[in-house]
Length: 137
Image 1 (tube, rainbow, N blue to C red):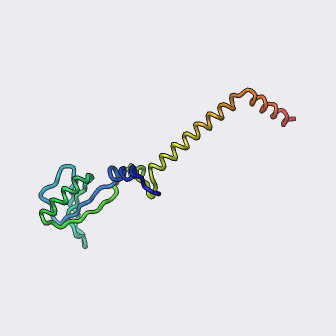
Image 2 (cartoon, rainbow, N blue to C red):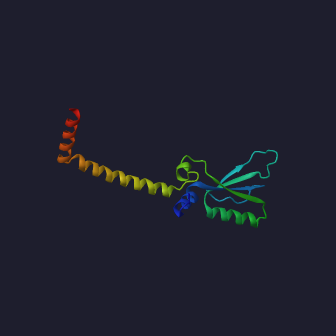
């Protein structure tokens, strides 16, 4: 389904995080960045990973890494949080789910009101009681 602007904003703000991989530890790491040393493994190209959740910080870090002529790569991944599956369901739009939920709730409300109106109508109750008596005979 097509993602709306609100869906994209939700994903950008609460779901996506940027991983910046480098060969050596940078001299400057801003506050709010999680710095991890990756375990050595065969075929692993990068040794350090910075987990950044703010786009402004990502741009700042990339600029500093370019100034220092440091080799790096970036990857945007989904956070491993409990709420990610609710905010960004795979292949679905939260906005349209909320719209259809609201439409359904309004429909249930009005159907309930109509049913309550008919249920409290004395003429309808009398007709139903007469029909039940007729069917029992």
